[in-house]
Length: 110
Image: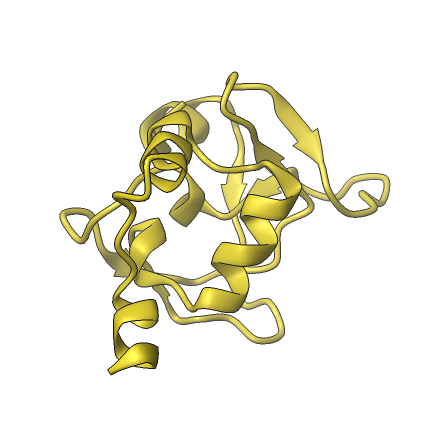
């Protein structure tokens, strides 16, 4: 699933989502969803790179203010989403093949 498909399905973005989409394009609940609450995912888990960057308006506590590729988000979020298994298949392949590059990991080790 990509960002456009998520939007068409009525799935909103949040920097602190209640759901995620796994490598098989299945919606996975990762936090409690209250009655009437929107279903949200972190769009940054759906793509890699910086070709698709836009301002975030999710208004969640701790909002990153920017939606960018998975490799562009802080390591703490990358690790959380990888552990939960809610990352696009292409990103998981890169990670497993050790070809995944994170701007935050590179900065951390420099």
